[in-house]
Image (cartoon, rainbow, N blue to C red; front, side, top):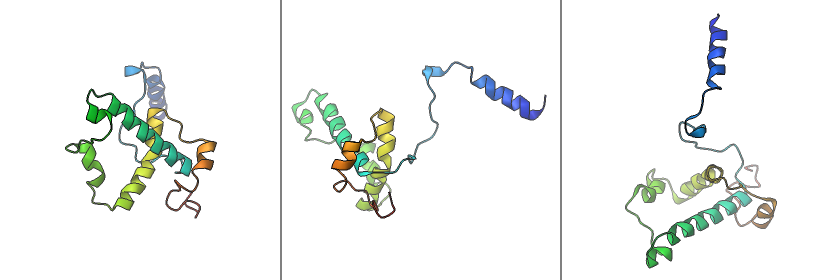
Length: 133
């Protein structure tokens, strides 16, 4: 058997193996999505983040936490956005680029026709409408 056909047979055999956990997992960290950032997507992401935060807050048995007035800051999550010493604008652009990855990871639709129409000017990403779309 040639090296080419033995390699093909090996790969074909991989497809018949049972998956651990019943799924395929990505190895590595996705950094960009293959979809353009649009106003509707940013509005969807903003709303998702808001309601995710509210859902998390009300899950705690503490009045201050459930009102959403407290954000814990001694943890990696609070330091994440400022670890690279980028400007606030650059951090915002990075957050925009993560929108599709996060929404897709949780199974939320990225946008809708209504969202695109409603939020076209309010949530326009940097460069939107100038060929940056």
